[in-house]
Image (cartoon, rainbow, N blue to C red):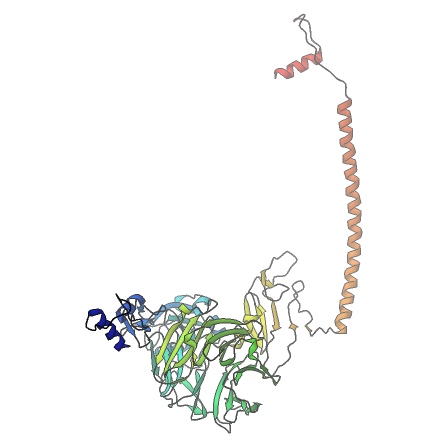
Length: 628
């Protein structure tokens, strides 16, 4: 090609005198790489706020200097969200709400240990209550909604701390409330090659946790008990957080399995873990050691799994196909992926609060999808598809936020995206990136693992108060001055009359359809107070009514019917009297009208002829009246 160019050039300049069939006045080399934009030109169009770089494939990447992080637009650098530099004392509050939410820790701690514990649990508030009114020993409540539901108390009820008089440590049935941070940051537990790490958006860095071995392959946690479970060297381990040392103590091995563990998932409600062993058997393990391990599924190759501890359902990925196992019913179902419009399922996560399944799958090994569906697989929805899903290593979700990880060219990246309700491409944010292998990760949030009472009450829809009665039953109650409507969930104000007794509260307990290890079938059971008599009415369970109740009810109906007959006779007599009186009044009015029409017509006569002529008495009377 270059030889021909030189030949043409020589001929055009006269150096080569061989004849040219046709004169060439100009020429251009046409090639895809002749007019590539420069790095400066590309960066000027991408508008990075600080640093810009272009790789060999001409992809533009914005980066930030130390102390700043890239924003959601992938162009602008901004300061990372930070925790409050110092805890703020909010005031004195009653501890009723906090006690009911099971926020209270079993440890008696100093003020500093209380704050450290809630800071480790990544909550917004820490409520400190003195043990039996003595501020030398404290209990702590860690939660995000304590201020929202607590009732203010007189400040003198919260006493100064013994070791720090400038601090307040609550009192008897009261707590001193402190605000640790403005909001809950994004916190991820990471299972890495070097051990367990924790990433927080407050610092935009991953910190190693002491006391854990290296090369952790999988992890789970139970938030309420401050436990972390992980796989190391094929064994399942458990480590719990110590508020006294502000770290996780030496892990202990969970025994009871003959084979090594490949993957597992925790049930934080019933203190169980579900493990897939190296011989592809699935077991249910009680990590407290109170029960023996239980075999569930034999010889099944599972790549990923998740468990709903409330409905007792295990979802899994088997050779790219989605499967479902009912733990209580011991039933196994496998689904074809044609329902999901994807060829192969790779990762799975559950939103147990809303009973939703999230999947990452591929259609043709180069197109990846993030799919959401209900537990019945009837409402499928693709919520995201793009390059950031390639080669996924994990998936997790909490409420309106989904997080996933990918491995591209030995570069491990974690992304997050808010669901509104889909994940928009411009909303995908790079949370953390590392060259160190990340084998697993979990979203760590104070409200990600709801307590059984919280879960059941959210489905009971009580208008005011809700409390747990059993593993499948909650009770709706009303405050003083209100009673429960027939729907058994809504409270209304009580309107009292002179013949009605005062009522403090009404109560209804009912079962929510959820499965537990001890109860498979759910039946309705209602207990309530009879508002009119203030005596407990008969409890009806499963539609059965006793014969004694029917006989007593029939006798009561007979008495009621006799009273009704007497009342009907009295009302009939009263109605007749009213009708007669009405007729008489009508007749009197009619007679009055007839008299007025028929009376004599007296008209005043004009007297123009003689003004001195005497007038009649009638004329004089009318004249006087007119003058007046």
